[in-house]
Image 1: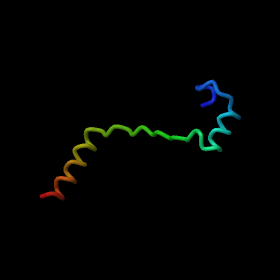
Image 2: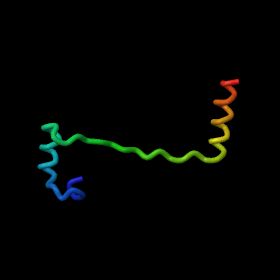
Image 3: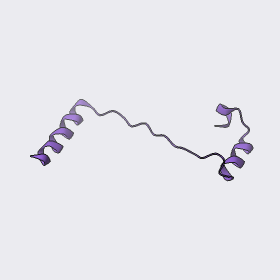
Image 4: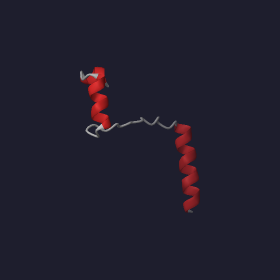
Length: 49
């Protein structure tokens, strides 16, 4: 993150420890395969009927 923002690492750590900057983790979910989509739809629709 220090390289991407061009801010020294020590400054970033100080900001994080003083709660001036908050850490955020973003995770990208994988897309479902066509087979998995069909199975998921069948399972959910069987519970509805």
